[in-house]
Image (cartoon, rainbow, N blue to C red; front, side, top):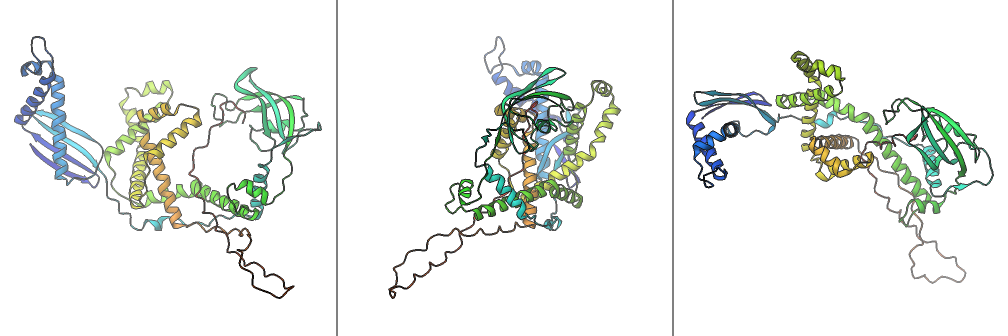
Length: 489
């Protein structure tokens, strides 16, 4: 067998081979004997079936196995000749022809291109650390403190107003038909927070306990449940009661409730913790919403290298299939059998496919450089979260992801997120949180020195500041939980 290789560029190569007839015959004989050991033929003992009968009965299967084994051997020899590059994707057989009892074949492979990362941190943008105003801290502190007291139903029958908590029943109708899963009893809702669809809370203002009212609203165009998005809906509402939260005093006792288990909890320490958390949240929003997409664009524009053609073609297949699934039945029929239209469809997604492959390879290289990894357990957690969010069986969703080869997609998404966050954090170190004032404790008792009668006792020595809690990392951004398909929330 004569094997030759050709490097097309740093990411693509071909392996060609001329396979002589004797090797083909020898391979066919060996595979036929292997089949004969297990084959069952009437009139023959197991393992005693003549090879001629095996070749006759298993003709096509035998030929396919011979071709497969020879292709594998050619691939193995070719990779050795190419000094064992890291092959990615699935090799494609671009030529496999029978020639005078032998084979003439060519295999195209894709290899991971070398990406010279250089001083990649120079490409990462710097940004001004977000700050929080005292007003924002106090507002958040007040809301947190209010959550520690249970709402109480008011005794007087006054009208419902903003910041009240309404206790009510409701039922929704579209075209006078009850809205599926669009009703509830003893629903609680704080008026003015905008938790229900626009117009719902506003129309409830002014109602009195015992009063019923018809609310006419429209579901938003981008509502989760597409079948009712943009449709007008009528809600019949009965207000059963009004609750308010008692005024809460901001003191150390509130801090103890909001910092459970912290023996040094104090109001000032709570303020410092809230500020730290709010700064972290703003930082996370800035990174996720603005900086990451810009950084990804900078990276893909900066690095230039050869792309593995097999991988690009596979991504084109994927994107073209997705695009075809969005077509109407009529357009799909026109596309079927029209080779030019199919070629045009594939070409329309080529640039996007190339960009995706390029991004993936850059992220892989950076992940290796920064020693960033995502384990299988983290991927499973994302799948299970998605299942719970959608109200589905996690095990069934996991099977769906596996069957549709979506596990690598999730892993890549998590890796990309982690790599970009790592780079941005490294270039923009998080500022140290302000130290919370120390909780005062009695000074350690010492044997009192003898003093003249009537002398004042010395003041206790000042205690070093209490160790501040470790800064919390902003939580990884997850997809927002979907609201109930027909809940007006």
